[in-house]
Length: 431
Image (cartoon, rainbow, N blue to C red; front, top):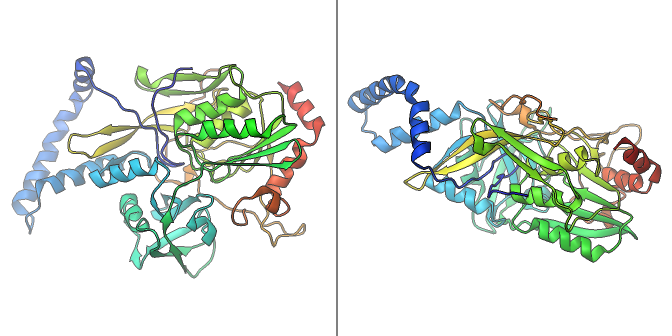
C-alpha cells in the first residue's frame, strides 16, 4: 500500500502534501496561467490607484496579502491563505496538543458556526453543540471575522476564560457560555469491553499514533465476538492514519482513492492481508460530526462489507487539500482533488449514509417524544464543492461506555445489533 505523507486537517481542514516543484512543473505552470496575465493589468491598475490616491499610506505587503486572501476566498471553504501565524497554528493543531476550547468551526450563511465539539474537551463538557452559531467572542462581533481571527480569539493560555455568545436552533435569545481554556491534548483512542467478548473503541481524531493505539487495544481485548468502532464527533485528522486504521480491519480491497486535475493527485490506497483483524462482526457509529478521515474509514468498511454503519448521515467532506509553503513563511491551502469511497461514491456535500439510521435521543426524551440532534454539514458551508461524478466501479458528557450505555441510545442499539447473529448473517449474504 503506497502512502504519501498527507494530512486531513480536522473535519473541515485538508490534506498536507510537501511538494517540490521542478523545472518541468514550472514550465507547465507558466503555460497554464498564461491566460491570467492580461487580467494582471487590471490588478496593477487598482494597486497603483490605491497607492497614489488612498487617504492614508498603506504598506504594499498589506495590499498584496489582502489581494491573495480575496482571491482564495472565492474558491471553496477549505481553500485558504495562511499567514505565518496561521500556518504555525495549523501545524500545532495536527500535533494533538494546543491551548483552547476544543471545537471545529466553519462559516454557514455568513455566520461563524460550530461544526463539532471534540469529545472530552472543555467545549464538549460545557455543552457546546454542533450547529451552534457563535455571534460574539469575548464581546467581539464575529460578523465578517475570518476563521483565522476567530481561532486566535478562541485559543489562549491554559486556565484563562473565554466567553462565547451563541444562538442555538430556533432560540430567539442568544446565550453566553464562559469556558475555561485547557491544553487540548486529545487522547485519540479510548477502548474497553462493553460485555465479555464485545469490544468498544472510540476514535476522537486521527493523529500520528492512532492506528498503533487501535492495534494495541485490539491485542489487549483478545478474541472478540464483535466490535463497535465509534467515529461520532470525529472531525478527521491524518490521511495515512485513516488508511492504516481501515487496513487493520480489511484483508484486501480498495480503501479510498483520490482524483484531481494533475496525475499526482490520482492515487489509490489498498488494504493488505498482513496484520488484519478479521473474523468478528463490526458496527461503525457515525453522526453529523463525523468528517473527512472519519468518513474515509466508515466508507471503506461499509463498501467492503466489513461493517454495518449505524447512526445518522455524516458531515460530507470529501475534498483533498494541499498545503504549499510560501517563501516568507506563510502558506496556501488549496483544494486539489476529491476522494471517493471504494465503490466510487463521492460523498462530497452528501455524507456517508448509514446502513441503519438511528437518531441519538437526548436523555430527557421518551418513547413518545424523541428529540434528535441537528448538525452543520459540508453542504451548509458557503461555496462548498459540488459532489464529483461517480468514479470507477447526543451525548451526555465524557464517553465511558459501561457507565453511559443506558443513556447512549445509538451505542446501546449498536451493541444489541452486534449480539444479533441473524443481522450479520444477512450482511455476509449481501457480500
